[in-house]
Length: 539
Image (cartoon, rainbow, N blue to C red; front, top):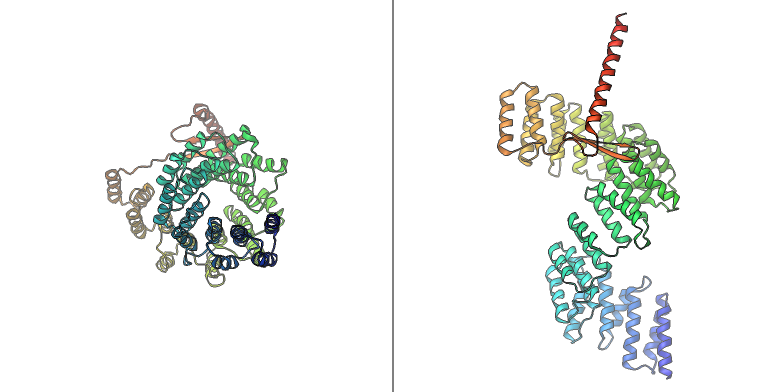
């Protein structure tokens, strides 16, 4: 009776333990007490190791020492150590201790349970141990654990971590019981694998959704370049009120990003207002997204106001505002803001310099662009990316400095991509540099033989130079390869919060004939105004 009370007391002390110093004192009492049986001792040691291994105040080193001196450790002790090693994995070069312990456990004839398998799969997923993970999967079947929903969810996560979508879907389909984590895991995996339609199909089949489900789909649509659908699902979430789920900061940041991609200012304002009306606190990510949204939608003053209201700004916030200024040609404001950011002790990142070079490109500032490009490397030790090189080539090319642009491309430590060569081709087209333009266009066609843009640019260069034989040869090559402009040109306009899209092929959303009639009337009025102006000038 006394021993049972003492056991409960020790267990309670371990549960309430906050520091390693306290834990070591408890450990000394466990070791020296004569009242604990072997099973009691193992129970307390498992609780002690669990604290050491899992608590943020614990010590994995101490847990390892205790484990090594424990005679015949039981399954809970092995589980605690396996969990600790799998959760604290940070270096692929380190030994996979959790897998070593699992092998030792099997050799000691200890059968794993539904707690063991998931942490082993987590270790395998972190290290991309596909074959080992499949063996763990086989063990879960062997020991009858594969029907456990926790184990099934872990297998889905493992196969997605290894990039094997088919296997993850097979596990999901074969699960006899699924919870909301199962559905969220398979949807998130499909989204990360760029299988957006598959994710949406699963989403529609779900009976019950939580905030993670909605956030995953909305964010996935934004990242998958389908912002219209992201807004549609955001609206659906608001009106469904399913299980009283309300948008959080992640939902709203994604919705704002979608509005920024589409240029939907009124929708973006509404989301901003929704946050203010409902008292949702804006974190750094959401505020930065709002600056980006207002900037891309053309409201620079509102972007500036949101930026100034930041209680504290990180480099991403500064970079976002610099990008807004650069986008709209406010070069001096972008440069001044950069100087202010550096004065605050923040180090710019590669995106910051990309925005500065964009500002230089808008204003044609060659010397300043050279200076930013050089300090990026020499002062801030940032290796230029292909985007930086493409921007520099564009600046030099627009100024007609083709020799310098060619030297810059030749000096690149990385292979120039189509954007770098495309910037040079655009400059050749602008300045009528036929010889270099032909060479660059043919190189781009060899890189992307099905990209219609390069063929049309080459045709334009030939036409302007009067090289009509070459023009016909290029058109014949396009016909042989079936090259044509598949995507029709289109534009969008927002009126009273409704988005209308115009396309060369027409639009189901717009009364095209009425629009044409109005355009004709405006054209006639403009002609009258021009005639009046000519009469006044003659007088």
